[in-house]
Length: 77
Image (cartoon, rainbow, N blue to C red):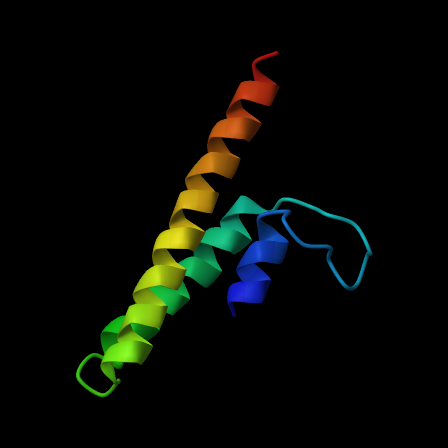
């Protein structure tokens, strides 16, 4: 799922098109699903698994904000 978020953020090539394309609504959707899965599995994961999901979500959320900011700046040029 994280790979899908990275594709939607334009950080990895879309395997269907071979291009890097940004789709912020799709990226947000995937990140939100990972967040929901974190909540649904709370108490059922090891400490390492919880730390991995926390780290992954933090990274994806930061990348989302950075991409959103970059696109907003590019649009204002």
